[in-house]
Amino acid sequence: MLLSTQLVRMIEEHSDELTRAAVADLQTNPKTPSYHALSRAAIHQRVFEVHPNLGQWLMSHFNDRIESLHQLLPASAAKKSCRWWKSPLPAS
Image (cartoon, rainbow, N blue to C red; front, top):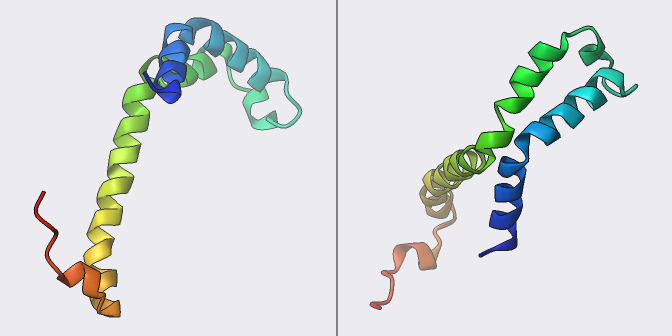
């Protein structure tokens, strides 16, 4: 199993503790003053939406990014008249 997969799984499995720690930090950290006025419940709800579903969230954003890159490739390749883009892929 990839290290990144293990890390995501650990974050998902410990989402309760991580969320509590994140909420406490966001409400007291001098670098996050806009969170100080929000209720613990509001911050908790928002943070908790990410932790248990981190793998799914990362993959959906990753897949969206890959898809957008693949949509841009033909246009940019055509502009540059890339020979490798126009040539057929070798048979496997």
